[in-house]
Image (tube, rainbow, N blue to C red; front, top):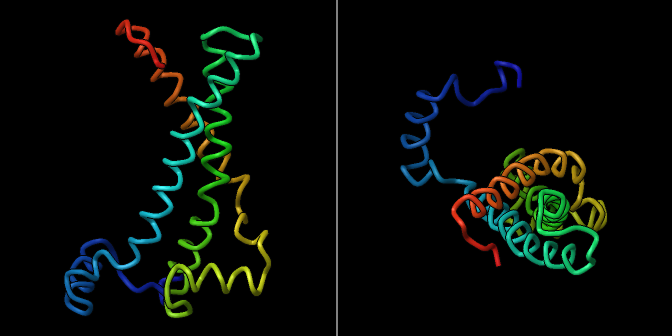
Length: 154
């Protein structure tokens, strides 16, 4: 934003202005959409990885090795993005224009009513492109650590 449109001059200014104007709880204003989004990302990635890994192993195409872990991580990242994108859209819209919506449900309903259901997945591919490398790094590292410790992942 241009300087004349910014609400705060910097971090210290924000941490002094917000409690003074909104109270201490104002520091957590808008945290609900961020928490919901984070929960959806975790739900998508954790619920999908083991399922994808079992499926990849059941095909017999690869064993329990790096190829299996990469394929499973890609599936995990895809579904985490798919599940969390609507929450990300709601979070971003509320952060951009908090006065426009009464809450998360109102934002989602308004968005779908005006733009259609597909609007809830705006930004899906950039989100997946951002989440994908994290999934690959996390799950492959996780599997290698388990192996190094002599533990089984199932």
